Image (cartoon, rainbow over all chains, first blue to last red; front, top):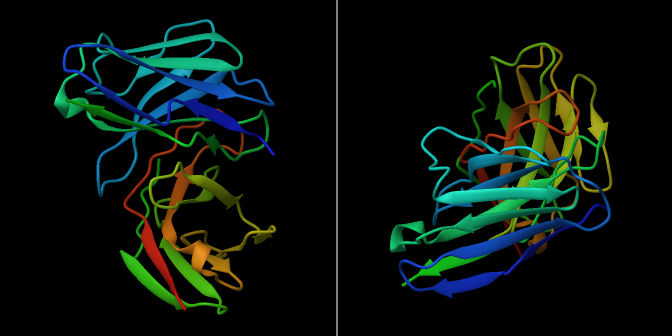
Length: 115
Length: 112
């Protein structure tokens, strides 16, 4: 089946630094990928839609200059959390779907802790 | 996208069928019903989706009422590994570029 690989699975960074999270579709091409954030005991919240070769579309309230998304190829999207602060500590998850399948495959998530 | 209503939590005995309900009374004609689940600290997992007809795959069955205002996800023989939060989501068009809006879902606990 379709596999989405997300890396790293865990990262701890200092306040003020930037962190890059990678999301790769391993056995299919994805023109669209989605990035979610999940705080403890809450549901997933869609942050942005990543489009290959064009700018990402951000959900209301998500700062595009803080959460930089790059989708440079059909198999890779990256999310960079810039100038991270403790309130950015969260579980970040990406997803993508092979064309026509109807069901999304999710990455295993990245646990970001900003200290 | 239409909203969904699910019970906050449910329990099920191991080996028995788990029936998870979902109300989506404002669903529109071309919107699909999707089910995903999330095991603790993992990314969500796709289970099944449907438009009008009942669907079955290796994981579960999806029963959609004739008026499409509600549906039930059935796990025929629940195991301990099925303990997870189950999300019923309405939207999309069956393709691969729709947004998923997650609600709070149902925490299913399978007990030994």
